[in-house]
Image 1 (tube, rainbow, N blue to C red):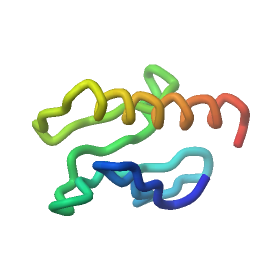
Image 2 (cartoon, one colour; image 1 turned 60 degrees about the vertical axis):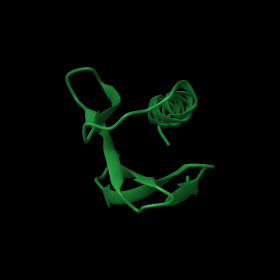
Image 3 (spheres, rainbow, N blue to C red; image 1 turned 45 degrees about the vertical axis):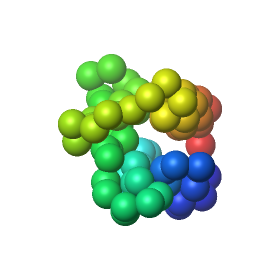
Image 4 (cartoon, rainbow, N blue to C red; image 1 turned 120 degrees about the horizontal axis):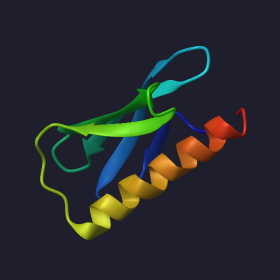
Amino acid sequence: MEDMIRTKYMTFRKVGQKPKTSEWHIVNNESGFVLGRISWYGAWRQYVVDTNECTFNNSCLDTISKFLTQLNQEQKGGS
């Protein structure tokens, strides 16, 4: 996976890499504000999103959900 993935309203930017997992920031394309962070949550054995008290509509949540799904599928596949 690339280190930066740009969508219509937000960009997923890789900000950290551990041996088996990575950390991402969700950045607003217009303002550059960091909307949240995606990281591995060991207790649930999957990637999760932590937001910075932001407001999202269904389209934005769908975009974030698809990105999380992709990361989790890659992790389970050993990529």
